[in-house]
Amino acid sequence: MSKENFVNIVGYQFERIHNGVIKWILDWKNKSINEDYKYEIIKRIYFESNNNIDFTKEDIADIVCKTEYPFGRQLRIDLLIIIKLKNGEERFLILETKVDSIPEEYQLKRIYQIFNEKHNKNNPIFLLFLFGTSNVCEKPQNLHSFAVIDIDKIIRIFDINKKINSNIFNNWLQELKEEKNRMNNIEYYLKNSHSFLDEDYWNDKGYRTWLPLYYCIYNKMREKSKKSDKWLIYSGNNNAVMNWKEWIAGDKLSNNDITQLLGERKKDVEFYFEFNNNLFYLKMHLRKANSLSTSEIEAIKTQIEKIWNNQNIKKGKKASRARGGEWISLYRVDFDFKNDDLSHIINEAEKIIEEMSKRL
Image 1 (cartoon, rainbow, N blue to C red):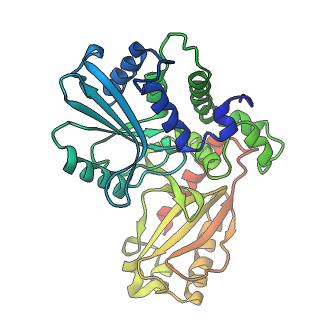
Image 2: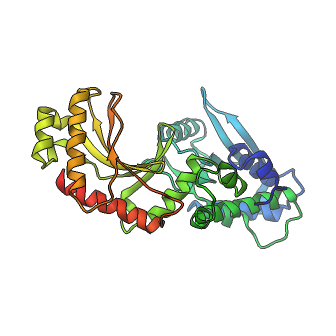
Image 3: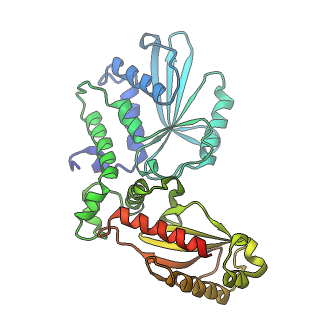
């Protein structure tokens, strides 16, 4: 990571940097970047989003880019690109950008609906640009016509085999490639760290601590899983989470001791497994918050511990005393991301899931 790179000096994690650089590159009045290159980028954006471009460079009269564009009540578009054609028509590219945050469906839906109400005849293209660990996090099931442009596609769009005499452009493109390398090489940096908790070490290598760092680790673990499609990565109460998406409904439980403890309330209970930072949990979700007393929860924990200790799986301990609510931790296992092989960790976790699921 170059300490002289302006992207690192200001902070790769700030979406405004990426929006600002793209605006600077494509602005038709910016003569630092020639028009052939600008048009090539536009073509590649159309291609990577599975759209057909219907104009040539010669058709363009102007390209106007607006960051933080206010549109509708309490709604801002991260980057609006307006391509003005000589025949008077316009084309719109609407960019929502994310670095380490997770896209929310309601945000995409509002942008799509409100923009189309105003410009429904101009065939706008909606683009979700993912610059950081948002690449590996769970995305909304309904993207509302937003095309996902991940970091590989972003690099393909802007990395044209031509020398660009601009430190702004070259610094930015270099850092996009460094970000991809950080995600790919997380195991190497884990093994070479003096301590996993050495924040200065991670920041010096360009990693953002702590959620984005955990997302990188989770993604590498997921890549090593034979059941990678079963794992979802997201943020939970300001902790990094990787969740096993197959939950166990309370009315599907086969363990008589636990079903007796739950009684009729079993239909309102779910059990699930997740990584939460460096810890791996078996948890319980109460559809009706506080529907179980503290003593009942502790009795379930004791039963879970008994089942766990009778299996040939990695051992841990009962989770700390429940504080109430709807999300209850029952049992936890500590993993050492620095010293344990990530393949081993994910295999151990999946073995736990397999064995415990049979016995719940």
